[in-house]
Length: 365
Image (cartoon, rainbow, N blue to C red; front, side, top):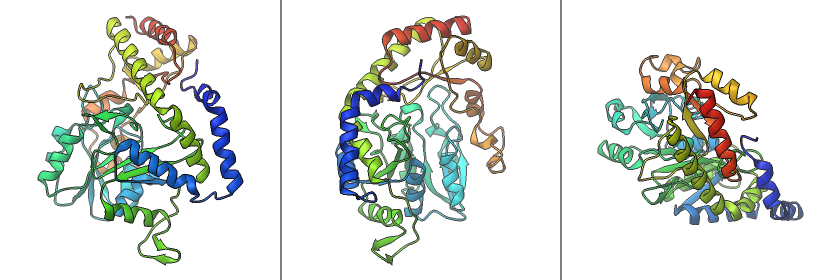
C-alpha cells in the first residue's frame, strides 16, 4: 500500500502531462516560458488573489515574501514551532528572529489566542502555518495584526492549497499566501516548485523583481534578489494536473470524512477540523501513544506511516537557543504522539477500512 500514490495519478493524467511537457520541449523556453504566466493566471483565478508569482519552491516563496517586506536583522517574526524547518529557516537566514507561539492541541495549528502576548516593537510579521491541509484561524490572526498597526501576515500554506476558510481560498487570506508544489503536496509538480499570492500591487512587483535577481528589467537591479524562478517544465506539469485538481480535492474531502467517521467510531484520537473551514488532508494524522510500537505493527501489516513532525523547532539544535524548551508544551506533546496514515485521492474505501482495522488492532481499540 503506497503512502501517497503518485503513480496512479500519473497514469490518469499521462497523455496530458506528456503533451504539456512536449510543448515545452518544442518551444525550448525552459526559463520563464509562456507556461509560467499561464499557470500564474490560472492560480489567480482559482484563489481569487490579484497576483500569483511562481517561484522555485515553497521555501523560496517564504523567503521572497519576507524579503519583499524588508525583514532583516533585529526584526522578529511570530510563527509556530510545529512545522517543517523551512518556516523558521527563512526567518533566520535573513538575520531576523523567529518567535515561537504554541499550538492548539486538537488542530496542531498555531493558537491565535496566544499571539498577542508575544508581539513586541520588533515584530515585523506573523507567519502561521496551515498544517496538514487546514488553514489556521486566519481571521483571528489578521485581527491581532490589525490591532498592532497592521503587521503583515504570511500564511505558510505549503500543505493547504485548495482548502477553504470561511468560504475563501487558502493563499488568499492575508498579506501573503505561500505554497509549495513539492511532489507530495495536494497540487504537486515533478521536482521543486512553489508560488506566493498577494493582493498588494507594490508587494507583487517587489516579489517579481526579487525572483529574478532584483531586476525591474534586464540588467537593471533595483533591489537585492535571488534566482528564484520556477522552471517552465514544472509549470507545465502543474498545468496538466490542474485538470484533475477539483476532482482530487473532492476525493480528499470524501476520504478524510470517511477516515473521521471510521476512527471516531473506534475511539481513535485524530487531528480535528474546525466547522468554518475544511482540510485538503495533505496528511491524515492521528494521535497515538507508544508510537514506535504502533508504527512497527502497521509496517508488519504492510501499511506505511510517517511522522510530521517528531521534534518542535524550539527543540531542534539549530533553533533551541531562540526559545526555552518548555515554552510550547502543546507542540511538545503533539510531536510525541502524531502519526500520519496513507492519504491520496485514489485511496479506496476498502483501503481506509483496512488501515483503520489494522490501526485499531495496533492501538488496542
